[in-house]
Image (cartoon, rainbow, N blue to C red; front, side, top):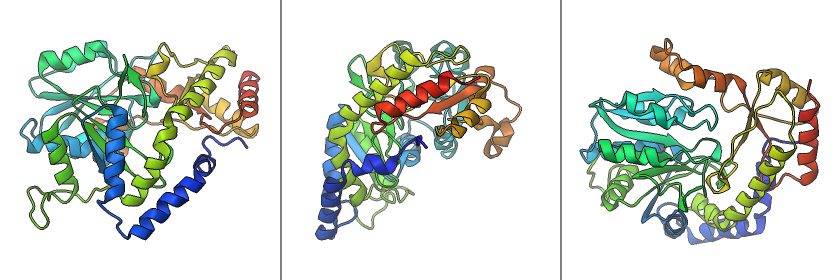
Length: 366
């Protein structure tokens, strides 16, 4: 079986360095808010080209604490609206509703799967305070038009960068394009920890301080609490592992792009729609997502032939029980995407032989 993602094999590439880093943490006897987190925060801020990085427990917390910080700073208040793509993973929307803010869903572009810049202005109201773009599948969602809309209407631009570490727009890294960005280091991400982890990046010193305080129970000084905060901290072990893996990220991204380019060149099945990649700097190949009306049949066929695939994602957020009040909503483009997408295996450890097998198998599907 060709695994969709062999996390163990990816980790074993760095086994000796990871063991050394974990040993260093154990020997230090300091497991939270120590030198390892500080080291990674500085390195990741430098990598993204931002002034500040704050480690948190996971990607969802990164997004929800950004929004909570804006509420504490007076830039937003419960009941305000945040524009979010309708086809995103549910975490993007949970971060909004968890703060008493109102998610306003916008259809994606059918070719890029990113939020459709042409449909944003139509949903802006007096209560709109921000746009959350999601760099879905590892492709940059930012456009100049979205940036100009934010400036014109005075909106905060928040990036969900969970799937796009190392992605660029005109030379600027995702995570540095907006006012703030949330990052996930879930093990399956391009930059993955050995457990959960996340971070917030920003160039706003005040925002970074509020985020850091909120993530530490709302405390900036021990036993003094400025806010009703969270317990959301990147631990020393995960930070140490991420520091090991970060220097390899660009090379691993290059390998991912090679695989994606091979898929684009060699998959020729007439019933399969391949992703549209117009700028390779703006795509880090977190996922390689194809579309077909015969999605379920193709997935079963590939499974039987020894190729594991996944569906990102089978059910739109607004059709989930968690948001049953939205069940009457219909977003045809989103629903078409969710009904047809299938993610093929892609990772820096897949071999050329495995890629050839996947391509041949996909092309023989009938």
